[in-house]
Every structure is written in C-alpha cells, then in structure tokens.
Length: 169
Image (cartoon, rainbow, N blue to C red; front, side, top):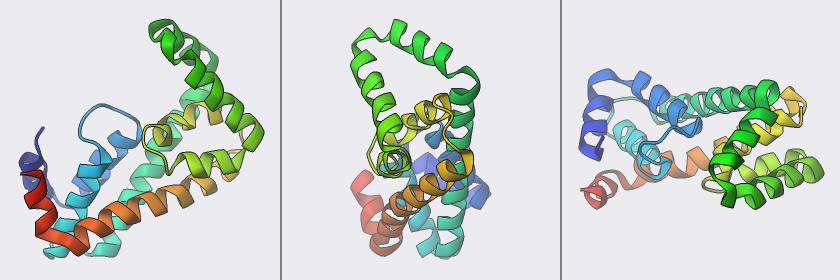
C-alpha cells in the first residue's frame, strides 16, 4: 500500500481508517510505519476531514487496543511466543533478553520509555504481558507513551499539512 492509496482511504472511509491502520501498526503487523500513517491522519484533519482532537483520540485508542492484543499474547502465551521467535531469529535473543530484563527491573518506566522508541514501542508489550505486569499500570504507562508519540506525528501532519504529503510523493 502506498501513501496515496492510504490518503484516499482516509478521505473515503473517515476515522475508521485511522483506527484500523493505527491498530494494526501497534500490533507490529507489517505495512506502513507510524512515521507515514500518523502524519497522514494529521493532514486529513488539517483539511477538515476530521477534527485534530478526534484524529489524535482515534490514534491513541487504536494504539492502546493494539498494545493490549500484544500484552495478552505475552500474558497467555509469552514464553511460547518468545521461544519460537528466538528459534526463528536467533540473532535477536540478546535483544529479547535485554527487553525482558528492562521490563523486569524498570517496570512501568520501561514500558513508558519503550513506547517512545521505534521498533521497541510495539514489541515491549509482549515482555510486559509475559512478566504479568499489572494490566492497569501497563495501560496507563502505555497510554502516556502512546499519547506523546502519536501527538508528535499526528501533530506534525496537522501543522505541516500538505508539505509533509509532498515529501512522501
């Protein structure tokens, strides 16, 4: 899917596209990265297709829901999922072990900061679930990190509008 196609979906289907695409992106399903998806939501909001607050709210709710899916995958199948992932990608073993250690030692701070770092922001949910981190605490820290991340990208699209779209063409 290219940027123009995604932009057309935003105009055709409205806010549901923001929710679905951001939800999938937060579940780490391959596709377009948030650096493209979120600014497009902001651009769409700047053109009056949806309000900025609504676009941001939808992106945050979608991010939280996508993170919950990975958290529960970690909580109910984490050891199996992590073991299979390491078997398939053995070079990632040190990275996964480091992520598990950080969540275990830093707790909620690791989740919050992890939500602000590309790649880690989606993966951090699985170790949090596998380590049975308190769900409410996990959700609050995730929501705060997601708010900052999404505000930066949706806001950039909203503020810089069409010039951001021209950059991706």
